[in-house]
Length: 260
Ligand SMILES: C[S@@+](CC[C@H](N)C(=O)[O-])C[C@H]1O[C@@H](n2cnc3c(N)ncnc32)[C@H](O)[C@@H]1O
Image (cartoon, rainbow, N blue to C red; front, side, top):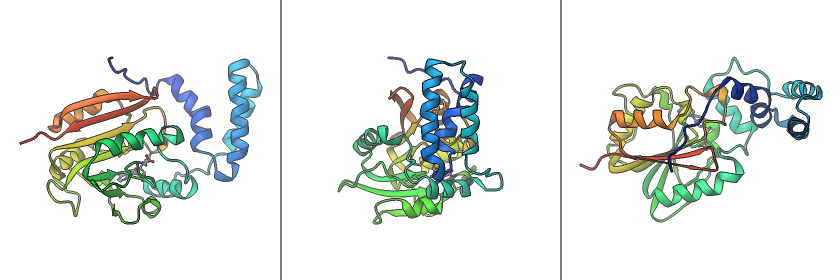
């Protein structure tokens, strides 16, 4: 079955995200979460049953007032730190997809695996056949990353420019590198992908899990679209690109470093 391209950032979608869904799920101050959840249920019901009801605008305004304070003065990294502190349950994919993604990645990634942009959660179960290294640039996320026995690397992947190497990684060190809900935070994917070719063994795999329709849009540097992702990976030399979709909007992408 051909994989559908996501429709992202249409004006309608933007409006929806900004006015309602994005605000409730991701931008509510923790102490206001219960109130916001109640309002969002009410809003959801009205939107389905009586979309012209003027209470809708009022609810949206009430929700807006429950948002976190503006974060204009914080760097992206500080905002991710804050997410780790304030929204400790907010793991990419949410509770519904967590087990599915964990099974998927734990099944396909063996050997030495880099869990890049790991946040404060791991989708890679402990196993005798796997050694996991966790990487993120948020100190607060790394502090909360589970599995204390795993090595953690604090590194800003957007500092990987042409020819730059991620410090402390040796050539062909990894059998797989995973990115769950991180692609859209990458400023220069081709440079990073070139570095992945250095640190992956021949035949090694890069895996992406993405949902173009959810996440912290304020912190996105780019949209996610599977066609673009494929083009960028192939441009630098990855092959055997594969893509599948689960739960409607979730994309699972793999590509391989060519064998010698
Ligand atoms: C949407 S969260 C996903 C976290 C985790 N993989 C999950 O699914 O729950 C994106 C993560 O990427 C990290 N990140 C964003 N930009 C980064 C960068 N330039 N270098 C390293 N990590 C980065 C953030 O700190 C955050 O933990």
